Length: 259
Image 1 (cartoon, rainbow, N blue to C red):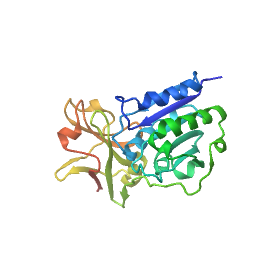
Image 2: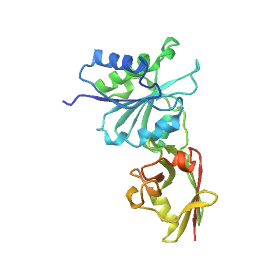
Image 3: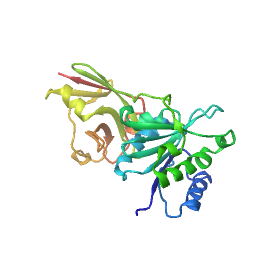
Image 4: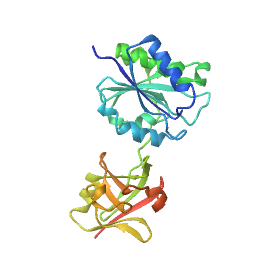
């Protein structure tokens, strides 16, 4: 029987004891657990950044994988915690809407509330999420963790505004290299384009009129626009950073106009 896989996505970084402590709790009970660090370098409290990264990779893990997401902006005494099942995977996180940013709501099969005390709120990754992940990995039964929670928080993914000849998109993520990911997917782009010429503007007088297949279609240091591996529009500098060289940041407006 394969070792259970538990992934971790947090904004806690690698400097402190928090993440190793949670891992120790898991390994103490389940020494054969396969713990995978997706990332601990999310900017503090950034649900959008965390959900983008996890959404892009969780389905590459085997069904039955347990994903812990420890990121929350509220940190109040009324904080609640949930476990959910979706697309054959299990998710353990704060009740802050991030589950609906990682997985489309129609794909969520069930959500339960995890019991918690005031003492648990100080270190939920260790006190709540790690024990819940252990139980989930052992039983695969969501009902063992808590009671069904129909009123869990929902959040809507930021979507582009699509008209007959215009798409208004937004930069939703800047990766480690400095490439800007836009919330315009390839299928929507092609559906509106219908083979027409286009202009992709990222500044008042700067635009693309071509989408490339890969970075090396342009010289080192030149601008490039392409669809990334996750199917979203990407603006980049070949072997450079579009954040520093083009001034593009998260939230930046990207306007696509078709002839």
